[in-house]
Figure 1 (cartoon, protein in one colour):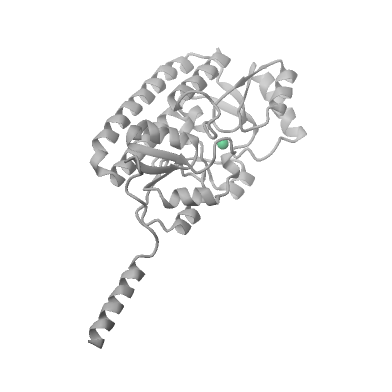
Figure 2: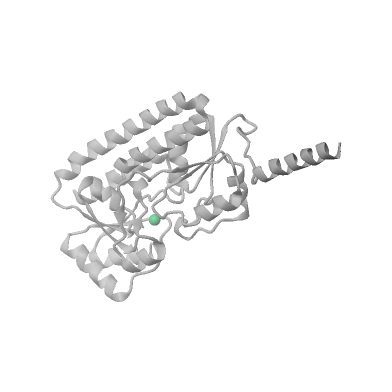
Length: 300
Ligand SMILES: [Zn+2]
């Protein structure tokens, strides 16, 4: 009898040891797949594909500059209750790995949306040392977004196979619209003699790669500091050399320097969306199209 009790106890202990971590609920109270996305653009893309079968929360609160984010107690709690985590990758979420470890969520499916996107190296040596070797802003390119959407379809389908067909159909529709957008603007940009534009922080390298354009910016890839006098002077020269008549500003970067630059070179200031913090109106595709239309307008 004693021996049987011992065996039972030992079995229970083994079972406990094998249960390190928690299991997130399969569905929310409303019967939806619980998903967390790192920031606004990831949430938008996940909702376009997940439709009414998913409940998506962002880990980085709207209005927070994502390049400076540190996980909070609330974001930890959200992650421990999610079945899927969607992040961009390419160094956009340097905190993600530690956070996933700490959450100990055993049935979490992780989607690194940009995993199969051909990366662009971060050319600023100091930023590369501090933030990693790649530019993370792939979600602002219609070509890269198609690759990312496919990754999200796979992740949602893995976590919720019963609705795989639904995610697939939404994914195809979303990718189709991105393809149309890409095709429409490829021709338009090709016909323009000018290709250079200036933004708040250097978030558009992947978009530039799609369309053969060139960006310059007030702040670097990670929006980590105002330019010094020498950098500002060379930016003024760049604007004059390339007849830049529009300076784009973003919600997350202070427009002060952009405004004085615009005054200096006689340009106007126009908002552009980085889709990092969710300040713009309209969904992902609407804001992407607005970006392309405004850049095109500025180069005509
Ligand atoms: Zn950025």
